Length: 280
Image (cartoon, rainbow, N blue to C red; front, top):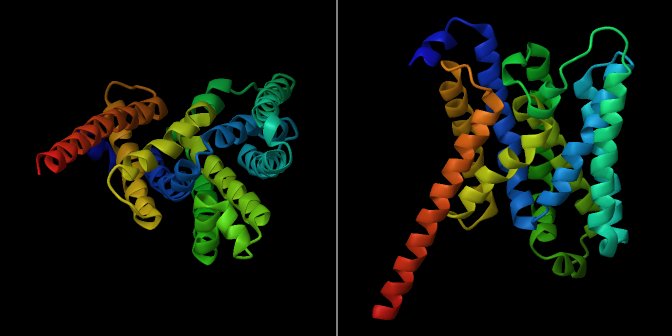
């Protein structure tokens, strides 16, 4: 209750709450594709390589979030190219991009003259530092993401579930796979300020993974995952407020506990159904 009382008085908490809700849209919609397509490792490569773009932007005096967006799109295209062309070496090459991106970011940040930023803010996020400018950028990215998903919903669905069938139906699989990875990259940028580079994949995948326990269509999965992402962000903020805990890490812990409970309940429900069928 103390958190919700403070919410009416402090603008930074209101910005944090709005940032969490906006980020939940991206993690709900694109997280569903990440879970169904099982490309969490690819999304992880994008997330960690983004630090290079943020560090470069900071070094040259630009806005780090714009550097993150540009780096995320470039890395997504590189990872898509690697996946389509060198599938046998995919793990090694993506791991290399992951490591090189983070190393480049750390070097840029360390060589930036003047005030040195706290690297932990990039790695683990700080939702309480979300500004009105960040909110406008997140809103714009959400709009672009939703428009493209609605426009190419069937194509993305075909690519996510059956690439061979999509190819036979004349869908340019490579093009839409690249576009899908670029939208995942946009979602990563949405989540960076909230939970940081290290924890992005957890918030991108856990709400969608929980939703998959209870719904069968990807459209419903997106809706449920978006709602869960928003719930975890609000709950994590509320839980972390009074004891002054790191908000991003608390959000992920709440999501992780919810996933474990959901997995147990889903397993028990499946066993109950199996017993009911055998008893007939």
